[in-house]
Image (cartoon, rainbow over all chains, first blue to last red):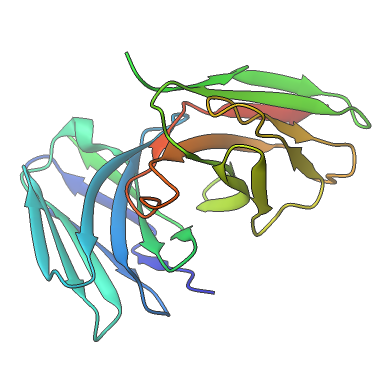
Length: 109
Length: 115
């Protein structure tokens, strides 16, 4: 299994601060994806980073991938109350996309 | 607008009953997926289909069944054999089969509660 682990499980910060979430996995991947889920809703794709990429940006999001350490991080800069949600990493292997357990992020006003 | 529609949003089932969750997409995607999410947990794959009239078991297929008679539709039946069916069910799709490594597009989910 290439199940992923996310760290921390929960994160609470003040509005305007940066939030960093980490994801580790066990086997080789084609790409790694990050998703966001608001409470009781479906997941929304945020960003995809391929195995031959080391860093990718999208707006206030920055994703890094270290294939030697089998880990990735998602950085949200200048957080807003609307960023409050759960964030999931998902590892794409040869056959399947496997999700991590998620990080619950709370942004306090 | 293109997207994935799941229905119903909320469903209650008595023990021993089968229920069917609907998933329809108009994104012209080949691949479709069903995931189960339990409180505070990640997503676990139930079934997936890369092409019409073909589907494969995921990691937790026992007690579930699917069909893929049309490209747009991938209904999930939760049978009475599923011992702990109370959960949030998510349907997703993406380009495939050749492009089935990209981003998933999700529906809004169906919450099933067993009474």
